[in-house]
Image (cartoon, rainbow, N blue to C red; front, top):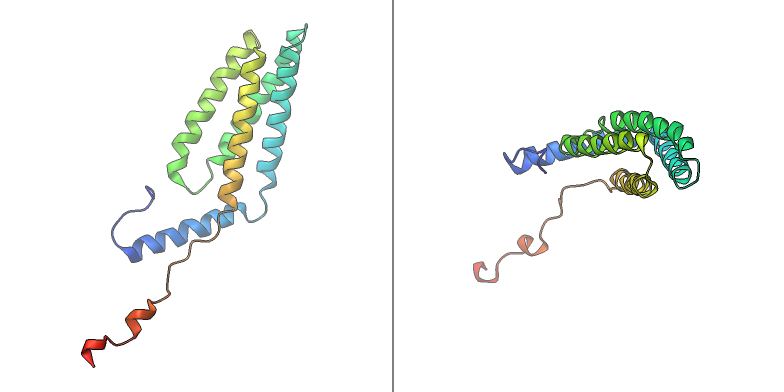
Length: 154
């Protein structure tokens, strides 16, 4: 609700409908780009983690570099979401991703890469739940009791 100015109920409802339409539009085509980026990032992180846990950790480097590129692309795609209050959180999360991936280029740490994969999976769940949020509709149903005359007024 921080994206909505609290001027009055009609304005809030109007803004809420507008944001709802924008979110629906963002996810209208199933957003194959997001699916591709999430799938690819998860695969790169899992591959890097597997290689970081093996005897030849240098094999993790290409996957880590690929994950850096994919996380930058995913961040850019998610910043197109019409919910401005999420943008700072998205930027903070991906700043953490970049920092952790950069550190892992020098010394790949299996558990850190697994943590990034888990964060990516959780982020995907959150974005998916946002896309599946039912339309928010105003309560236009009148109170049935208010339609009846008050017994004392008869």
